[in-house]
Picture 1 (tube, rainbow, N blue to C red):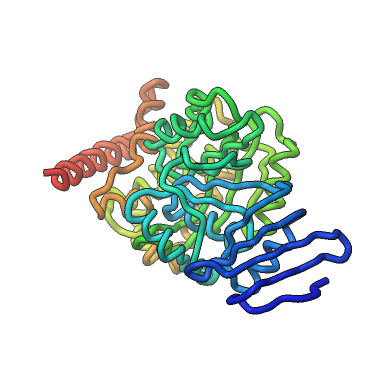
Picture 2: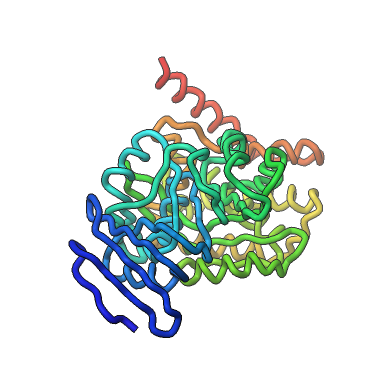
Length: 378
């Protein structure tokens, strides 16, 4: 298939004999390899990526997804980094020092599955700078959702798929409230990953899976296409046939894991190895399950068993595994307490249920978060 190619410092020309595809590329600044592709680019982008080049793609015949990743923290940076690493057309949206670092130094991901660095990535500072994305992954904190949507409505089309992968059970519905166009579907991630510095993501534990689905059409073919694209990039992605159950299962896991690690101010490994602390951890989980069932969600016994099993796994691997809420508290940043344990408390009140562990978490974290924010602003 390959007829001719030269080094990164020069030109690369490739003609695919079977498809007639022609590509030309030239080394740009900071090692960025710029391609101009006249036909299908899937194979070409992946090929050049394997050579170790970083890609800025100029497309004359757009026939694969143009992907936007909004928010380059632990989740967006990890999954977006994998997509970009495999040569897909990915543009990150970042702010402040993260934007500056990505623009000048690229993205570094340190992971239990293997480290990698992308010396150059496509990044913009505003959602409004995106150019007609086909797929948008919203990986900001849940409290940034409204501001993201205000900008996103100006750059998407009716066919654009938007998948919020933030913590919570109804982020897709909140996004739909603000978007008059586009197709919005819920998503979620299982991963313990955080931004440890400008342009640096550290993934320390967790299964590194991404799930999404259509509440009304479990076999949505476009979501199956996205699943295939992501799996081709090494992401453990699944287009779920029961996304409502997946959302609540993740919600019960994250409100327990994040809530208890934030309350105890320690990694999950410390909690599960302490008999009394783990008993409170399980009680927190059971409170959430009672709220789910009162909300009309039929869980069965399997989600509880899986969450406990997953938690106990951290006895040997969770000595450094912190929730993002704990990391935010430690760094004096705003937390997602309202979207997580705050939601459990509010739903419990609606159904007349008692959730004392979640109430303790909610009020303690909200107070601590407010104190740190007030101190940082004074």
